[in-house]
Length: 493
Ligand code: ADP
Ligand code: GLC
Image 1 (tube, rainbow, N blue to C red):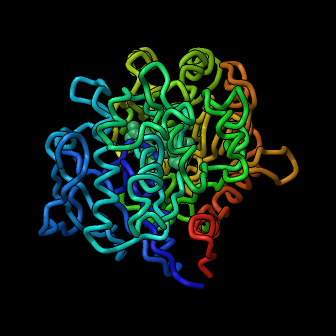
Image 2 (cartoon, rainbow, N blue to C red):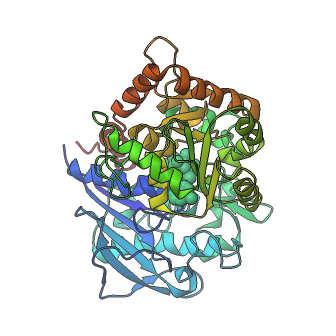
């Protein structure tokens, strides 16, 4: 079958710029697609804080981007995804991307995101024209690039890019990019398209909704989430359009980059280990206890959290449950996260109040995230909603048993423990309540103390699951081919 040309258009890509798991996905799936022989490339904004890893070359010609009243200009930097030949392009523009923040202004507002990402979307497609490289598929990620499919369908329809199919992935339906309608003129898109599908209301445009209507095919990051978002409860107001497009929506569970996330090779760990020899994991646990000022004691079960502190992640339930858990059980907790200031304050306070059994680090720290994955016995993820979730998969690969709520991708990736039956890879609970979380943690704790052989079995099964992209990348390739057929009328066999 013929190789495809695929352009990833994304606001984040690991290891250059990361806010959450979207970056991990965009940094990992292209590697696997390239291994399958496809010509895959990535384009992302060059934020002020982008890490210039590897060799970066500025492209000789400036990029003239047709937005707003007059052409705007960008510089394009070219590099590769580390360890691969996958080209990664970064769009530099001082007005929009010199600031360090990815999704906000320096004072925390989102007021010019519509212009920033309309500019970026148009720039990504203009870059293809400048390169003389016409992708078969443009694969966009979340609301920030929601205008890309419409650009292909309208202003670029009569150009070679008019034959390019679009695939739009929903990483998180909660964030929709609600933008002032000035963005329509700024992006030089036809008003008729927005009015027809009700994409403008009360003077605002919903960028996510626009992508959902205009994209050739839609994906989201787990099969269970693909079902949830078509219901009124899980659709965040967009369930109608998702039911309308249900035939074009596929849930494909994310993989993980199992070369980067490998306890046998991870250089951020103080000792490496594998399922066959877990001695290094005990060393990681001791280092983690030491780092957070906890009693260094291998016998006490250690629960870890690495998370954005957002309502979605359900960590308010942990905050509520914590006093009872720490009073009633002989356990330790470590937490790494940042985001919501109320939760940050709560966990900072707990850091003082439960010194010795609870430790929090408020901030973003990739190395510490890996130490927590390696050094903990259990990984806690009480998400209210979780499109896929990567951290539970990292945990399992690191022999750390996930304790998760049954929602979205957590349902698709964690199998609940069944006592005495050698089944399960973690602990799953249903209700988004502090008491359900406490019970699940209690169950894990009892398993740790009373059934060490069963615990070891759980750990071996968790470590043996293959979460790599090898399973999911071919599903994307199938989808790309269907998208191309839909767009051009010819199946790219
Ligand atoms: P989400 O994208 O909703 O935040 P995921 O589980 O898909 O959730 O991915 C989160 C990613 O971000 C993981 O790679 C995780 O290790 C990382 N991460 C989250 N919070 C932090 C933090 N405070 N410091 C370092 N890494 C973090
Ligand atoms: C989003 C979701 C998370 C998912 C990630 C990568 O940030 O919240 O569940 O794993 O995207 O697709």
